Every structure is written in C-alpha cells, then in structure tokens.
Image (cartoon, rainbow, N blue to C red; front, side):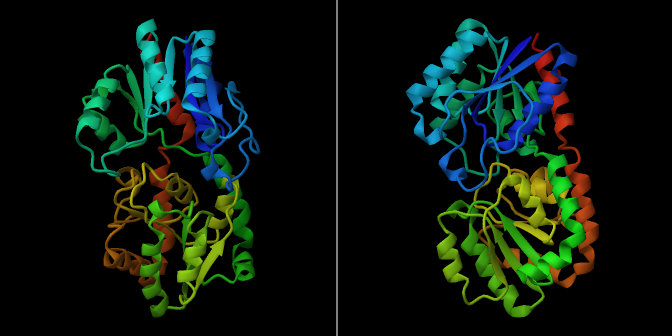
Length: 378
C-alpha cells in the first residue's frame, strides 16, 4: 500500500519528526510512505533555523529548492501533478488542503480512485466560522475518506462540517520532537542558575516563545506584565523570537522593569531557554494549536494559554497545570499570572502535571494511530 503525503515545507521539524516515525514503523502495516515537500521553508521562518540543519530519516523529495513564497500556484500544481502521476499512490494525504494546488490533487484523486486523508489544524476555537465558505468546506470534506486532526477541538470542527467520528483516525497529530527537546532541556538544567545570572534574568520568569507578530497579541501581554512588574521585583518576562513587531515591543517596554528580549534561535535550541524559565505564556488572538505549549510542557513548565488556542481543550487543565485566559481581558490574565506569583511553591507540581498531560502526544503513539487508520482504507 503506497501513501503519498504532500506537505508545504521541509522546515517544519514537528512534521518531519512525525514523518520519520511513520517511515520507521510503516512496514509493520504493509505500508510505504513517501513525502513530497513542496519547498524548503517560507519567509516568515527565515530566523528560525535552516530547513536541513537537523535531518530526519524518511523518504522524501523537495520539489523546489527555495522558499514557498517564491513558488506560484501554477508551478506548485504542475509539480504535484507530475509527482502523483509518477508515484501512483493508493492513498493521498493532504496537509494543506486550503492550498489551491493541493485542492487540484484532491479532485485528481477523486477522478482516479485514489483514497484521500486530510490533515486538519483548524478548530472550533480560533475563528468564528459561518457562511458560504463553510458550505464549500463541507462539500470538499465529503471527498475525503479519513482525517488526521490537531486535537479534540479540531475533530469537533470537522464533525460540525459533517465528518463522521469513525473517519477521524487520530486527534493527536499535534506533535513535536519530544526526545530532542527533552535532551536539550536536561543538558541545560545543571547550569540553570548560572545561566540565568549571566542573562541577568529575574528570580522567576514568564516566557513567550514565537514570532513577534500582531496575531500573537504581545502588546496585551506587555500591558498585563507592566502591572505585575510594579508589584514585584521577583518576576520577569522573556520574549524569545524575532518578527515585525520586535522594535515596537522593545520601545513600549522601556519603562517596564524585568523585560528581556532574546534573539530567535533554531527550534532545537528553544528548550535551552525554556529550562531557564518558569511559566510559558501564549496570548494569541488566534492559534490553530500552539506547538510551543507542547514543548514547554515536555520541559515541565506550567502554561498560560489564550482561550482561542486549539490546544486548550487537550493540554490546559485550569488549576492543574496552568490556566486558559481571555486574550481581550487584561484582568483575567493578571489574575492568573498573580496565582503563580503568590504560589511559587506550586510550580514543580504543576510542571509535573504538564508532563503527564502531554505524554499522550508522543510521536510514535500518534504514528501507530495514523497507520492503523490508513490500513483500514484497504
């Protein structure tokens, strides 16, 4: 049984980790996996590490040795049609079915009898969804035979669009490279206090990790932390990343104490910074999932995550390993930040709860679920 997975960019390490696990265990199911990576990366990932700096072992081809932004829809479509005709798969897995080029493949598969699995990251939390666009989605989803979902909220969204629960092969496709993250984290812990002193960080620190862009709602986070900073000298706020808002954020934070901007690092170095922090904060207005939450929880951090983020239902248990909050309500976030300030002794216990909750999003477990679903399509 031959499976062709179409994916936008080689840079996405979390997907490459999953593809490598699928490649490793697929023979147990009588399945052959091949991945068509359309491009190396995209411009918004320019400061987040080279696409091929960290290699994974799986069967793939990069169709264009350049950025996704530089490839026209027409060129993508032609390359993908050539690929699917040459590979002749039994099953096609589309990971970006919003892309016109991948939609062409969906129709091609329908006409030629190739079964289709759609990977879905959209969820009921991140946007209000209604109207003609949703009706079009319903029709497109009827053409697929199975689905891989980023969490229970993603699965709920598909079911609202008419997908049967039996067609959802996994609800845990939101995975990261647990082993690499944990290895880097554990290597950093012995020098944790020394490295914090070198950086001149506060005794305890909230940390945001990601692109410094408007959807992440970072001025809101600064507004909340300004009040925290005025109340206690023991807590700081770290921004780890690059983006178009960096200069603006640095400017508006000049009068706030204990704000630290760290330059963006490659994904496999992020856990070295998480090891120095105490609580992750993700304040996004909209977030299909929020894989940095997985990363922080693997490192044993409690988390504060905005309610629209797709991971909330699966990974955030209020009062157990952190809290969800309204990204438009400063007082709501403040209340939950103050919980940690007033109860620092709870940090280790809540961090352990994070590790327990994220354990089910383990790459090999998820790969087995996906391959079981693919095998049922025989």
